[in-house]
Image 1 (cartoon, one colour):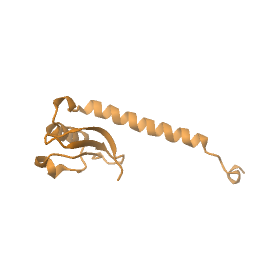
Image 2: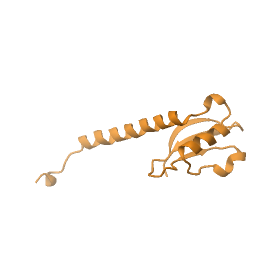
Image 3: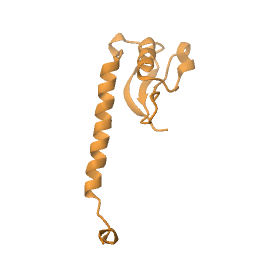
Image 4: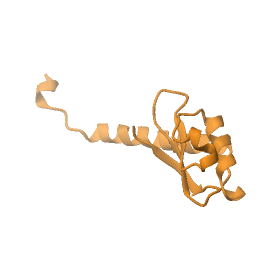
Amino acid sequence: MSFVTITTAQNSESADMRFVFSPTNSWQAFAVLGLPERLGHLEGKGLSLAKAVETWNLAVRSRKAALQVASVSAKIRAIINAERDAKKAASKTQIIPASMLS
């Protein structure tokens, strides 16, 4: 499964932590990797956006690195739009085989 990293920070145990999104059709497409031991049972599990943000905010070392659902949602929308636009641009540059023209 491929993940898109939304943000990174240090957890409460000073280890690296990542907030990730997996482009799937599931509403549980978010995960937090690198959680502290006390939250280890949630490590890498698919979570809803709200639950993933809550988990992140419980684990993050610096309150400046805390997240809000709206800001994460906007960032994901920007990633999805950029990917869609890139696919659209790539399809316009593909050469159509002559056999398909007749």
